[in-house]
Structure formats: C-alpha cells, structure tokens
Image (tube, rainbow, N blue to C red; front, side, top):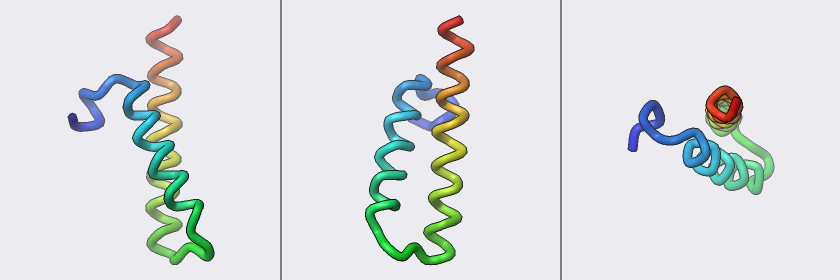
Length: 55
C-alpha cells in the first residue's frame, strides 16, 4: 500500500524497520543519511497521524 493510504501504525512500523536497518550500518554515507532523515520524517508523520486519529 502507498504510504498515503496505509494506516498510521503500519507506516510507523515500516519506517521503524528502515531506520533500524540504516542505523545498524556505520558509518553512513551521505545518501544513507538523507534516506535516514526521510524515514525519520515518515515515522514522525505517522506518529502524529496516529495521535490525531486516537484523539
């Protein structure tokens, strides 16, 4: 499912898995740092979506 139609919890899980995989590598290349930042933003957006739906 595309991220926009995926439930927030699933988006959060997918982002967390990607973040864990990237942070297991040391040192990160510049492109990996950009990818990590993108996944961190995705996780945060999913977290916020989950909060607004739960309220």
